Amino acid sequence: MKYVSFDTQSSEETGTTPSTEKQRVFANYLKEELKKEGLQEVELDELGYLYATLYSNTDKEVPTIGFIAHMDTSPDASGTNVKPRIVENYDGSDIVLSDGIVTSVEKFPELLNHKGEDLIVTDGTTLLGADDKAGIAEIVQAMVYLQQHPEIKHGTIRVGFNPDEEIGLGAHHFDVEKFGCDFAYTMDGSEVGEIEFENFNAASAKITINGCSVHPGYAKDKMLNAARIATELVSMLPADETPETTEGYEGFFHLTHISGTCEKAQLSFIIRDHDREYFESRKSEMTDIVDTINEKYGNIATLELKDQYYNMREKVEDKMYIIDIAKEAISAAGMTPKIRAIRGGTDGAQLSFKGLPCPNIFAGGLNFHGPHEFCPVQSLEKAMMTIVNICSITEKTLGQ
Image 1 (spheres, rainbow, N blue to C red):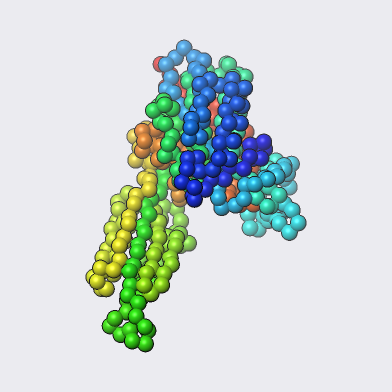
Image 2 (tube, rainbow, N blue to C red; image 1 turned 135 degrees about the vertical axis):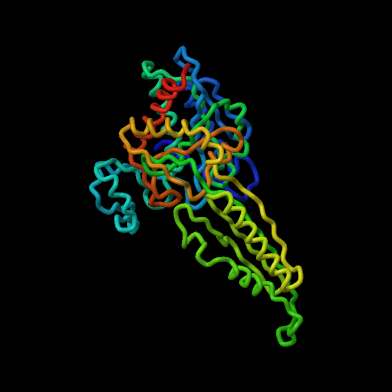
């Protein structure tokens, strides 16, 4: 609850790292806290990335493992002056956050999965920030717990807290070599028990259409209406392959921006698919559609297509013992492991392709990025014990 009092929204507008200086304020607070709690090699670099170490307490040679969480909160909702409170022993009814703002069971039925628990909620004017300050709290508390329980043997553990995950840049400047881990876990998932090691392959597509403006009364065989052609281009994509019509492992084309006049139009898409072959096919389909427009109207459209990230499964599937350890750790903490595919991206995906296999584990918060976000205290505790268990199981199963 102390952590969420820091406003750490990231911003896509600044072009700096970290994207907002208020993230650095929180990073400095965490730096001092990690030192106070007995961690070593606590380092905050000039870009706002915080690293720390808990040394091994075993005679075995054990792989170094890492736990990672992000310090920023989403730009989608205010993170200023967050006022958290605890609804103790939740009774299953609607939760009144403030006058006129209610988190209802009808709209958020997942509340009922946490009946009898203690829920941290907002006052309805901001997000909570459990994404991902819950992950930070769980990691810090796990490091404290391990020091308080020296009978739990573990290898060297590295902790990493990064800025700017919410704007897709969290892993860009993460120093994997300095982190020095054999594998790691991001604590940035949602519901208890979840493990995620599959995510979308992702690309962006930006299309510019240059038309020809002529007085509409005398436009026959002369005008090229860029705005109208833009809508024609959109109609050429499959109508049933959009975010609002897909789920699970189904991919999509998502129109994120369209603007234009007769003279010029611009469109932005994101392209997503879990399957790499289908992903490449989707990019080819987008290219073919632009080519068709150019053939019809005479080279008026340009396409800028960029890959953003890939499905981390490619880098994890030959190291499935990492997932097995997480599943055993979750079970030992009293939960049923749930393997889920992320319909989005994660810092772990980019880190996996930088050489650090890094699946994602639940942090326990729900309804992220808005005022109805909540986080059960019991979920925080279960995630913390999952981290402790991962460290212990790694020592027992991989230590030599």
